[in-house]
Image (tube, rainbow, N blue to C red; front, side, top):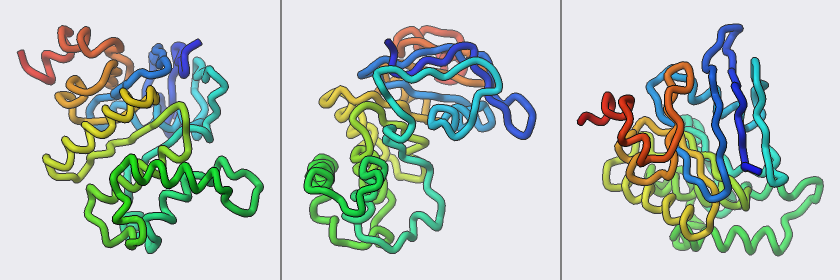
Length: 232
């Protein structure tokens, strides 16, 4: 069974259909990029996958025992979040909140997972620094480590490179690709950067208020919709 399956699904915003015709599946180990212009329905789909918004029609099914609170989620940052006055370690540790449940304290296992992901993201030297003092690229590494602490199955990343310079952007793309390949963790990433999506992802979902393409990156690169946005 697929990790996530949408069957002729639609989501509404303020009573109007925002995105429709969603019929796709994501299997364990896939790296899916959701692309499309502003207003194409990407954010509504993300909220639906997180179970923050019910479908207007159709279904969203989760397989392999996946629950919405077991998805590692990296949202777009607001200005207030970028100025959050906590240490890097505290921010990453907060990724274990959903797993902690009603327990009043973090366990040794929680702290071990945090240490592993801090090392994986190469931010050991930053862990005692204040989060708001970091650069944009460093903050995204911290938030990615936090998201990894919340999941063993699925990472959901909403425009993770927004506002970053080109060099840091490519570093983060390569890091996400490496996590996907080395750990087999499924990745779903929202991006405006279609060229990079084709370079790094295994599958593409293109939205324009409805699903206009879903398939492998090779299939997408040969499609008419890709030709419009990539040239050629």
